[in-house]
Image (tube, rainbow, N blue to C red; front, side, top):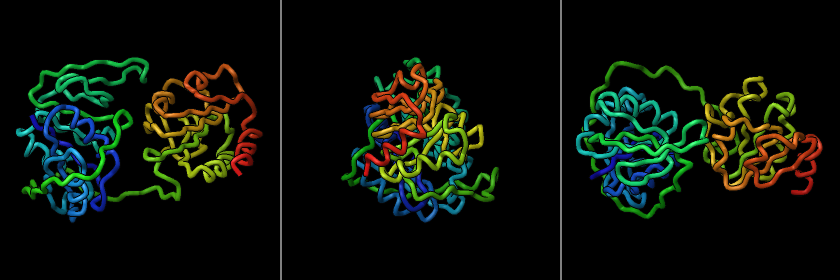
Length: 309
C-alpha cells in the first residue's frame, strides 16, 4: 500500500496543512508520496522532500497549475491514482475543491474530515457539529480522504525523499483563473496562529472590535469572530471560526462576548486552552472553557491588557 498526499502550496512554499496531512497519511501504514502540482514550484518540491516520513515527491510543473485550479489538479491526481491505496488532502478550501472531483471520477465514496486513523481502512470523523464521532470503514480499492488538520500533529522535517519529475496532464480547459483578492494583515494567519482572540455578538459593533486589538497585539494573536458577529457585519467573513468558518486549534483561544453556539464550538473546542469572557454565567461557551470570567467585557479586556504590561 502506498498513500498519496496532495500538497497545498502557493508555488513558493508549502502550507502547514500539508504537514498535518502527511502525519495522517503515515498512520495509514504505508509509504507516503507527495504530489506537488504547480508552476515553477521546484522549491516546494524540495521542501516536501524534507518532510519526515515522505519516501517520494512527484513534481508536475505546468503553467495551468499556477493558480491551483481544481479541474486541472484533479486530472493530474487521476493520472497517477491507480498506483495508490489512499489519496489524502487537507480539509481546507483547496483540498475540499479537488478531492470530491477525484472521488467522483474514481467512483468511490469520499471520507471527509477525518480526525483519527484507526486502521488502514477505518477512520474517525466528527458529525453533528462535532457532538458525535463516526467510525467509518471503507472497502473501496482507493480510499479518498480529506484530513481535518487540527486532529493531527504537523510532521517533522529532516527527511530526504527523492524528487521525481512527472509529465503534467494537459489543461482541461474547463475553467480559467480570473483574479484573486487576498486579505492582507500583519497578524498571523487564523488557521496557523498559536493564539487567537475572537469576538462575538456581545461586542455590539464592528467599532468595538478595536477593544480586542491591544490584547491581540500583546499576545501576538490572530483575530477571529463568531458567525453572529460576521453576519451582523461587524468584521470580515474570513475571520469566522466555526463549523461553517475556519476550524482552529491554537495553544490559546480567548472568546470574548461569544455565547458558544454548537456551530462555533465545533470550530475551536480542540484548542489547548480556552478562556471565555461573557456576562452570562449560563453561556454555553463556559462548558468548554478551561478558564471563565463572568463580567462586562468592556471592563475586563482593558484590565487584561494592563495586567499583560
